[in-house]
Length: 172
Image (cartoon, rainbow, N blue to C red; front, side, top):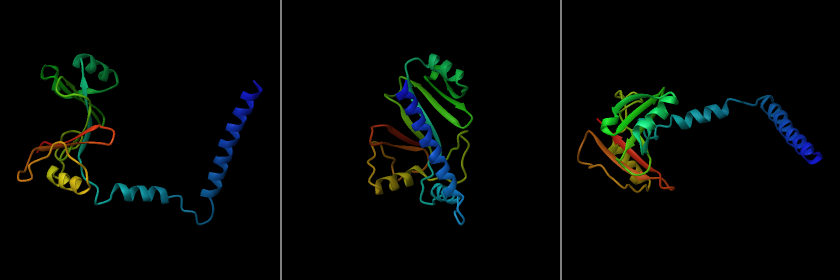
């Protein structure tokens, strides 16, 4: 009991000391506490960032109706597709989940250039072929490529270092 009490007091003292030190540092004269936020905004708005469009997770499900019920209980509603088509796109505010039964193995991170999270066309976006060129120039190996001599709908695929499949699927 004595060791537990000392451990809890030690953790509390460490937390309190860190809080006090942080407060003192950020209130020093000339200390700009907005630097972190400003730097984050610069990185997020970097013109070199690829415009990948809407993001969703495409899940390989065993029973589309059971998965539909589960995600409805989490507050998602059907946005597109249907159980008879073996796929549903479900939405909760800006979050999108695709449920796919028997269409592919594993789960896929999906981006849709040219679309926002409501499948509305974006005024400005990077064409999938331009994304492909940039990824290849950055040394990313693609497992599926778009034909560079075409325009319109196309897709590319890659995998991250952990094997997570990434699909960049342009519909327009």
